[in-house]
Length: 166
Image 1 (cartoon, rainbow, N blue to C red):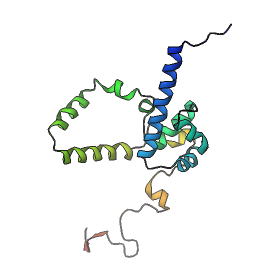
Image 2 (cartoon, helix red, strand yellow):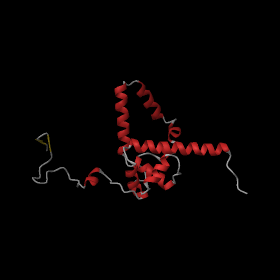
Image 3 (spheres, one colour):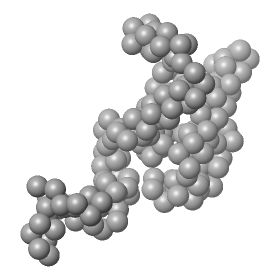
């Protein structure tokens, strides 16, 4: 005899799945990525990403980890646990107080800077852990090589605004 989940448990599961779907869709859109790009970078079919974002398909743990990396989000955030786990963080309380004293323009700059910091860091675990097809850096993506800054043609240090710096 199998146990049937009660109506409240089923509703809670559906609500959690819809919330996850919304966070995934919002994260993808915030990152400026199409479903096709996400599909290419994760190996998850685009149709599956669409179904996941609509809450019609469950996402497995490996897929969720891949999506978190591509979107630059933590698993805790995607699962809705991030805010609760950080509510007592003293630095968050200090930021909230500092935020209250800022002008609206400065608040926008603070938000932009926070977003820059969030998306400029490699997520824990990295893309290699789950087999993602992502470039490691902008220079690798562009196929450029990293140099020491010297002008290789003349062995001069780089110039800024036409001035030579030594």
